[in-house]
Amino acid sequence: MDYLLNFLEEIFDLTNEMSPYLLLGFLIAGLMHAFIPSSMYHKYLAGNSVRSVLNAAIFGVPLPLCSCGVIPTAMSLRKEGASRGATVSFLIATPQTGVDSIFATYSLMGLPFAIVRPIAALLTAVLGGVMVNNLVPADGEASAEAKAEHEGRTEGCSCGHDHKEQSCGCGCGSHEGHHHEGFVSKLREALTFGFVEMMEDIGKWLVVGLLIAGVITVVVPDSFFVLFKGNTLMSMLLVLCISIPMYLCATGSIPIAVALMMKGLTPGAALVLLMAGPASNAASILVINKVLGRKTLLVYLAVIISGAIGCGYLIDYAMPRAWFESVMPVAGDCCHEEASWFSIGCTVLLGLLLLNVLRMRLTHKSACSCGHCHDGEGAEAEGEDDCCETRVCHVEGMTCNHCRANVEKAIMGVPGVENVTVDLHSGEARITGDDVDWNEVTSAVESIGFSVKW
Image (cartoon, rainbow, N blue to C red):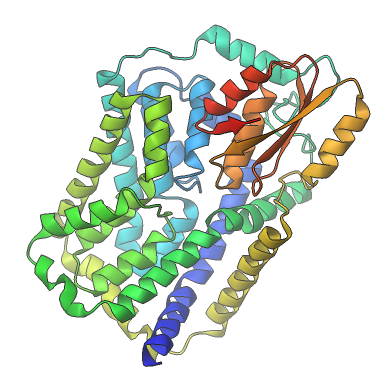
């Protein structure tokens, strides 16, 4: 019983520390999504140059994409003309950090960790992209003709329907239903994305991270990690073996890193977890191998491993230990401090948002960025043109709303497709079009790392 009470108390304390910063991070992420056009992220990533690699890393660091959502996004960028090196740079930088995880890192681990973490992500991403451009042949780069064909398909179609990637003519790159909309509508879109879609994507992993941290803190004895004291390399290799194949989101890994530090692991080993855990998992390894090739995958893993260990050593031996270990007494003594009403209120709000995600899953309704349910859109589209054929397939491998959006985008790029709605939870894609090559639909979805069953 004492273990259970200590476990629940530890979870509550960690959540109180993180919740205000998490909510702020989700809000900023939503504002970025609503007010920064996606075309900005596509425009500067072409070409086998250091500049494109650096641009990809700079764009990727603040984006709130987890390691599952970044894969289809990166594959989509690749199809639209991003170089192989820029794609790898984006893949390495994006899942390691995000505005939400930076704020959460500051809340639990302090300012030095919050500064070092995005810098380490940026450096390893640039290194990985440059190495891929230099070591992997540049075959299969998107040609100018292919890009022009893609742009021509997304500008409009003869059927008269407004496609989701259609341009409104002002260069904003906005989606259907958002052309020339006002500030209030954009703000509503930002709140929906930040507090509904993002919460749906990473809420489960945030809870899992808090639970694992509570288990480590309460159950694992302090003497367990004594064997690794004084052996920094073994500590980092242990963390790598755990974190590389396992899924860890950038935010959910933070309480786990804090718990490991409280049990005796060095700040450098904690940084290894924060870098390698979000940047890799078994699913991303398989997709990168399939889409970008084995050589690219080997460079990708080598850069993540060497970059994480190198940055870990830099923290342990080149920077003052007090900068990073100040988190330990704060985390250990927080149970003796009375939580403020503000932090408790933020925790309650965070809990309500998580319950809303659970309600959405139980009622089997996925959130849609345009505010309309998928079934309604599909029915409306079918009613508009009875001569169009509608087929349903199942897309396997989607884990978040970014995955869903990229699948919809890939299918909409196939000639003849007039409407597509994808349900995240069931994996069902309902496609309406005239003279659609369904094999091409399969190829378009598989090219961004998913599989299709008709």
